[in-house]
Length: 338
Image (cartoon, rainbow, N blue to C red; front, side, top):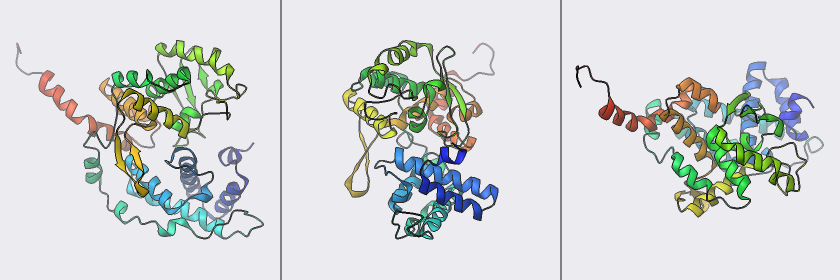
């Protein structure tokens, strides 16, 4: 399987991408392909209401993805590139006849996406956006422990999922996409493959010794009893070769409900409610715990797989009050005897 086939397993999606490659320079194509792939992965695995294919994307989906990018600290210019990449993809798809593309596409969904309010976002506004805990929700290690102890069945797998996600800071797709061969059980290291990483770069993260028992219980005992036990993935299920990001999100949401700590963060389109505690909160919680434990910002950037340190800096805005509290209570004094 070629690299392109690995990244774009759908024949029709791959055909459109190949057409795009012929019309763009190498650097532009690389950027556009990555943005299209990240959008496709988000749409099919991480969106609140996932679709089966990028061809099913609507303008509302694209706007939700843009909102998600801004939540993660991406700049307005990155948002514009994302929209341009998706637009080019659909323009190529619209130019194909039914012999090449069996999926009917009536319009380019980006045509009805307005970027006006996103283009006006300044650095100061983004900093203000992350000033409150509500904008970057996170749980303390004690709350994570409570969450892990209240998971729905299968309890061993689901407890491992929550604790591993918190200890590694992996995204949903990265966690669910782990293969057995990606885990070095002796060294307690996990390989995140480039096809699963949002920035397209592989990386290695670690987990703590206190997960050894759960990991062994899952791999050596409970994993063997699921229908797709022969799968190469670390977390197969009775219905597929690997757990989906949506399923993991439901595990976290149900655990939060069971623990009595779930809240409704907001009401979105069509009156649907968005839960405050979801899978991505575990990643935020890892970052906040790492900062509190004194991690260097650049080390944290690499651990999280961020494309730039500016994205990682959002956690510093959240931690500012605690930093100032430490200065006030335990700051160094220049006076002898203090």
